[in-house]
Image (tube, rainbow, N blue to C red):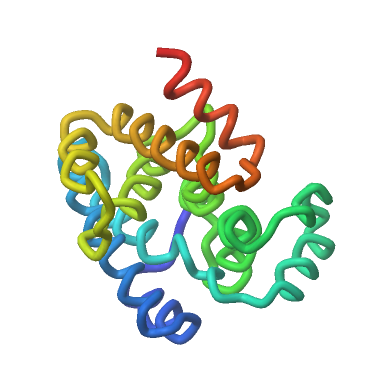
Amino acid sequence: MAYPKYDYLYPRVKAALSRERFEHVVRTGEYAVHLAELNNYDQNKAQIGGLIHDYAKERSRADFLAEIDKKNLDPDLKKWDSSIWHGIVGAEFAKDELGIDDEELLNSIRRHTTADIEMTTLDKIVYMSDFLELGRNFSDTDVAREVTDQSLNDGVAWQLQFSVTRLVRNHRAIYPKTIYAYNHWVGGK
């Protein structure tokens, strides 16, 4: 499968996002290069995954709902919001509007918000880079970066534990795929 080059994607992603969001995706791509290097993965593809992961982040609710219908996606998605949609449904926008037909890249967009039981190296790189890019500063950021530098799998488990704990503490619903991912990456150890 092929995918467009970074230089082609950069201005198109920039035009779709606010300045703050665009700066985040550029930093995510940069951090993805770092993780790709540590994990012997294609640095070019990792950077593209980071750049495009939030391509649909700032779309309207109406756009997402229309795309769910248009692409005959799981109707249960309509019960959620853009925190889930920009990954799962956002991959459809990236495919159609950016010309991404590489299934691994599309899945890295889909999985960057929810994680999954099955995750490729690229899925894990984009998932962790979104969380750890150098503009992020939360409690234990340095610990999470150190864990992830040592083991990408341990980093995924760390982030899932952090995120699920935060969602529970804030009385927020947890997307089912994230619960399965948590049980696999954290509970299954």
